Amino acid sequence: MTSQHPKTSRSLPIALLRARERVMGPIRDMLSGVGLTEQQWRVLRVLEEDGPMEPTRIAELACLLLPSLTRILQKLDDKGLITRRPDRDDKRKQIIQISKSGETLIATHLPASLAVLEQTKAQIGAERYEALLDLLNAVEAAGSTGDPD
Image (cartoon, rainbow, N blue to C red; front, top):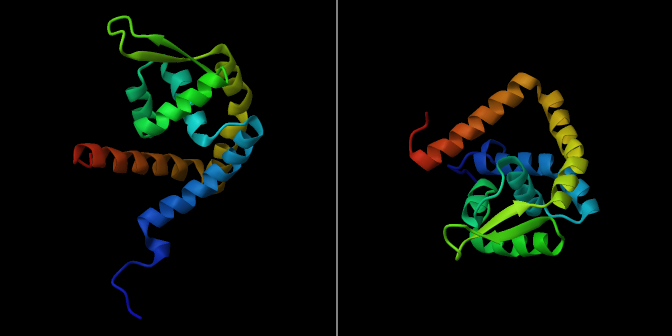
């Protein structure tokens, strides 16, 4: 049977999924030992990196849908890994912040996560690794602005 579609080995969506699984598998294994999901880890990393913020911004930076983030924040709150407070200017809004326990968890497990990425970098070469990140960021930027540059 002849198909007009590219082979799956040359399909961008499938290649991205395969690469994601290759990178995330070991990170998922590390996180399961800590009792966190990769989504919870992303939220903690965003908060640790960028500081306190509103849930809408967290969802954007952690690549999550807001309804999913609501459940994730509840789990993180239950575990004592985040704190919540009302926004000073608009009491209807919440500001989410990583707690000391959350910071400790990140500090303890970030080296293992970085080791996975360093292994990938070593396997494909530092230059290709950086080029891959640049290309993926360009794809994301093109989708959000309509301009590939």
